[in-house]
Length: 168
Image (cartoon, rainbow, N blue to C red; front, side, top):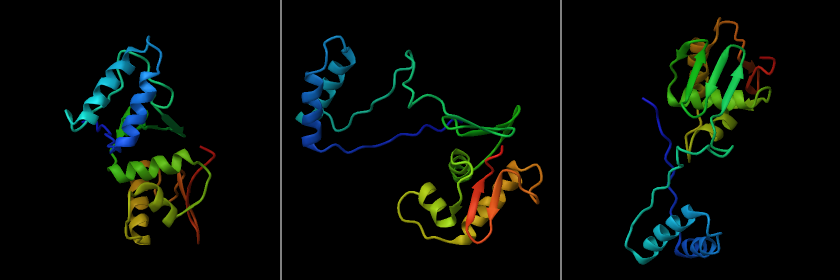
């Protein structure tokens, strides 16, 4: 099952009014802006309590929303589907395993402390526990490394933390 990420933003009345003003000034040929304006005005009047916005599937997504693939060695990571593949084989990862792997792979060659990995992957306050990150890395290596005892992808930088091998 594909996991959809849904973001929630609570709009202040002043921001909603500002958005309405900007949409009123938008060019007339942007019909989507008129629909959004009506929905925002409905929020301001209290006729609606929430608004869901979805990118239309019949048009090409802007570059920031397009599929992001990371390739490293024989691994392919998909940001949108949150899948990792080696050739035709999908490598099943937990959500946090994927987040850690994607973060490290996106920043190939950069060394991160365990605390930096926590800050990048966990939302909000989380109890920093070195053994927790070490356990996640160990599980990831078992799943992605050809030889977990001699890692090629996620490298340990002794006394500091971890990095994703920049030569892959």
